[in-house]
Amino acid sequence: MLSSIPTPLATIGLLVCSNLFMTVAWYGHLKFPTASLWHVIVISWLIAFFEYCLQVPANRIGYGYFTAAELKTIQEIVSLTIFMVFSVLWLGEELRWNYILGFALIVAAAFVIFHKW
Image: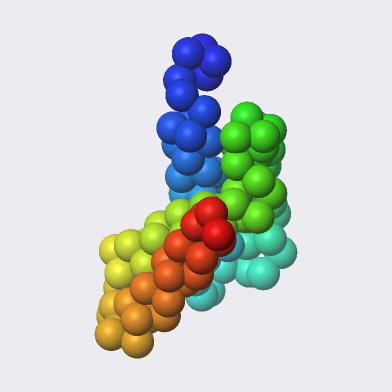
């Protein structure tokens, strides 16, 4: 099924799905500060399993079309984008101007990495 999807779309789509799981696994428990730490760890590991089930194929599919550095850059941008939305919607945190500026600088770094010099 994934073989009929263009490589960049399949790679980025899997990375987006993967990072949704990762963000929930790493930060979702912060909304439940009274949950015991060992419960949080076990549940996070169970959620992270699904993240790996998507992350590994994304890198396998994308490698060759993208370099490893490009794959990592895409993953970081996807991760930060999802985290910004998650922190506002799930954790109720404020999206501050300096967070947006920092993210813009990371996007500028991505330009440098993807540009053919």
